[in-house]
Length: 170
Image (tube, rainbow, N blue to C red; front, side):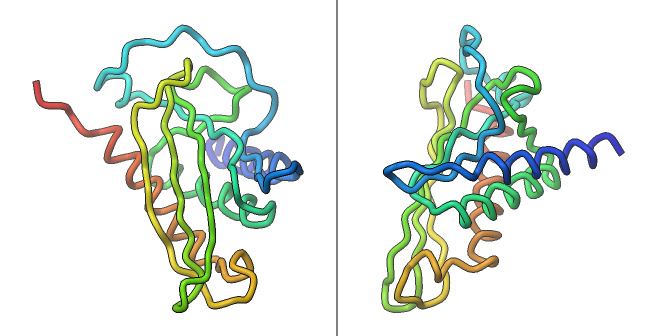
């Protein structure tokens, strides 16, 4: 019950936080003021196994797409056992910064996404890149469907989970 309440609260806060504007299209998928980063622990397999992530504001996507994606990322992460925190709830071990772009490619809307997993002191430790196809539209962002968003969230969380559980060879 507590997890469901936390997830509902988290999704609501993500939706509210996505209501930002700026010169570049952004969708703020963070939830509240950030705290000063803790001293970074060395990146180890043990750190990754117990990782708790905070999403930084998303760069490049319009508000509506960012809101849909933040909600889908939260629900997919919960289903797959990846711990995502709002910045005001606990100490994250990693931050995730995301970048999206959408272009018409003749077959539909191609969404390119990149996620950087960062230590609290902003050192990149892993990068996720991918593509998802949406519908054909004169405005590429209008071609981003709920299935496109689901595909991006699923691939993103799967790659985080794989990285998190990958034991480096000695």
